[in-house]
Length: 223
Image (cartoon, rainbow, N blue to C red; front, side, top):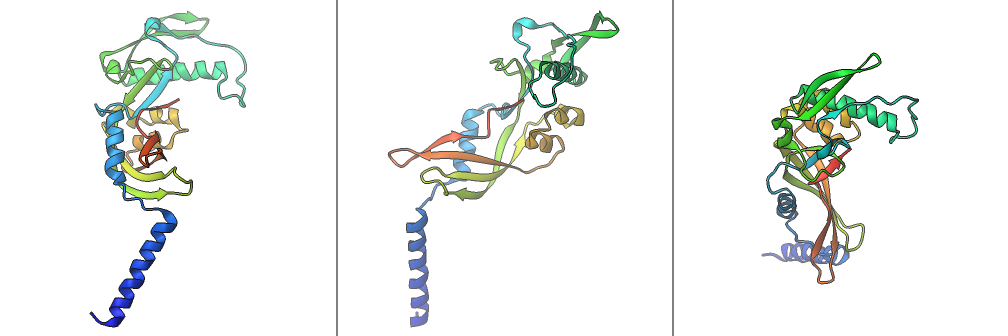
């Protein structure tokens, strides 16, 4: 090896050492780790995402819709009238996909009253914990690649990655369904059949230097 190559090698090694000192050395296999974390949270591969239908609990079925009168407050996302209208719409749309039965049981004035109950198909997706009422869960996160490891906060790395979702039900591909959750870009992307999604896992370093997961992709609810 000639002197020029030796100088170049020494210079390159010195740069690597310097960068390691400045940024800290992180040799974590984040792709494997993030996959394992999602699989631990979601061992059956069927609850990476849970979509809220509404505050209907087990003892409230069969559930008959109601109508609330008054003005919707455009500044209040939790307006009771808006929430009731959204619930009635969700029940109707999910019934068309076979997750609820729908039965006309009377009228409130000239407005039809429908009674809903869960079908066997609906129970397949039901979150059995009844967190927030009725929620339909599905999906398995499959990590594709790590996009970036962000160390801007000391001892609190943020890992950006791309993934695709398996076990997405056909009913989510109905635009009327995924449009109900338009505030969540990943739900719309899954409904539209886009393959790659992006996620972030947030970590903090424990006193022994190991990482603790603070927030992940699996097991989150979409209201």
